[in-house]
Amino acid sequence: MMRAWILPMLLVLCSSAVATVLTFEGSPDAAAALLLVFVVLAGVNSPLIFPRPIGAREAQRRSAVDGRPVVFWRPGCKYCIRLRIRLGRSARQLHWVNIWRDPAGAAAVRAANDSNETVPTVVVAGQPHTNPDPGWVREQLSSSA
Image (cartoon, rainbow, N blue to C red; front, side, top):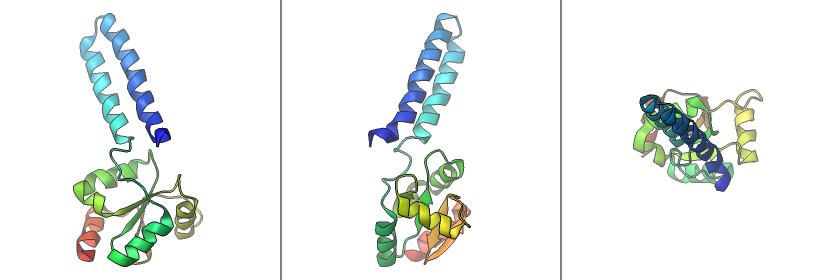
């Protein structure tokens, strides 16, 4: 779990150091803006944004039981972040698989995308959809409930 926080912590620490230097040089407004941007960037790349990932096999088993879609994603992917943010609170109802932590998830994504690890890949009723529109995913989620 600690590895997931390394990038966000580095972003905050480095931006804090630069903001401190800017403040002492007489640019407190620029320091505050820089710090704000990097704190937001750290938050987006933190485990706080994405629900706790599960393994691909467990996600597929749960999806078969409850009919909810499975989302294969990876940290730092701007399209995954866009999907997660645009889904809002309903994103917690999906089954999220981090392909960098789960080899079976990475293999499932490669099988669906001509040997490419293109994410987000959303599996609905056994059919993969690469980088779908968040509105469409929301519709699929509401129809599975």
